[in-house]
Length: 151
Image (tube, rainbow, N blue to C red; front, side, top):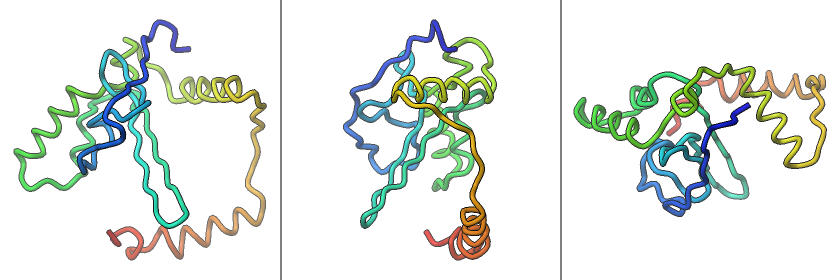
């Protein structure tokens, strides 16, 4: 799927992002880069005995757009951050020279996981108990202003 894409694994900043909220700003150890630019953004939060891992692979578009939803002290700081992200990060389209659909990217990830971990991925649906729990969490936790704005 991604033949010809010279992907590297960056031995970078040992996870130190300097407090930046932009997961694309600085490659940490073992993050994926192309031509020295970060391709996959990753963030992790560890609290108590839990770990929340987030990762994103921007397929196309303006990588600096992430700065539009973050808080900055003034417009100049926002623009500086946008320019920095554009210099340090890339999209799959920019890295490969072609537009790769979400479906093709998802299929490539599925194949890679199955191959790498020697397993068979089987599509499925949520159980009734899982569906019930989803609705409870959606309405009582994640859909509430208290959750959204608790930061």
